[in-house]
Length: 224
Length: 108
Figure 1: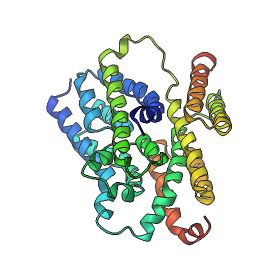
Figure 2: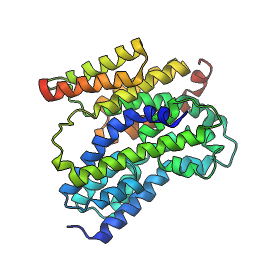
Figure 3: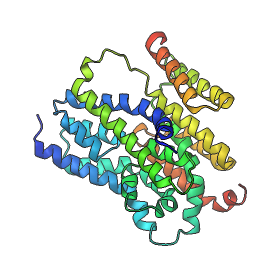
Figure 4: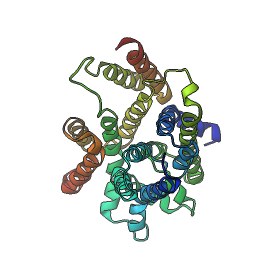
């Protein structure tokens, strides 16, 4: 894939990350934290909800230990992403550490749905991840520095990420034809949305999905 | 105001912990030949994660109060219908997002 084709693939993430990053930057500025901390956080942490969580913990004067534990629990879902990337990343050079670092919800989604030839896969993955992080850094710094000056009303633009997940779900379903896991995930998703506490919904739903896969391995494996 | 040592310490810890959550499976499984269970997860988990992420993105919608998530329902319908019809991801995402933004800003 050439560079522009890769940029095109990442545009939906840009539409989500720039405004979301700006919201993060604005919130950071409202806590009277200097703008360059927005830059450092987006460079070194690179986790959307994780960074929002850190800000709310700053605001409530949480200890560093509490911040560590909360971030760990919130981001634990990423463990599942890594689990389905192991054999792909295995062939890669040391640069895979950046890919592992940058494995956010959206990056994972893009990497998993873009089938690439073996030859330039690592390079393409690196560019996708770096572009996504660039959008995120750009948004958060913009928000922290001059977000207040921008008159445009971004309200509702976060739906682009929802739409991205929908489109990618359809893609993966068409490609894999895994009917039973698909139906199972629908049921778990609906259950999670209505019945599970909002702040733990994702990690609990993913754990239920993983547990169900293990429990019904026999039934699911022989009927693909 | 916050102490810079507090901010830097917190960012450092959050960065390490976040990286750890992403690196755990690689640290555990990268050396060995992947077991049949790991392969089975690699096949089935991505689709399930993606579908669950859709509902995760919708988790804070207030379905029981006006406008009953109508803006979301319309935008989801646009995403599904246009994508199944035209098979163009960018087009579907753009149309749905614009429709959603108009709904929440001008209608509801």
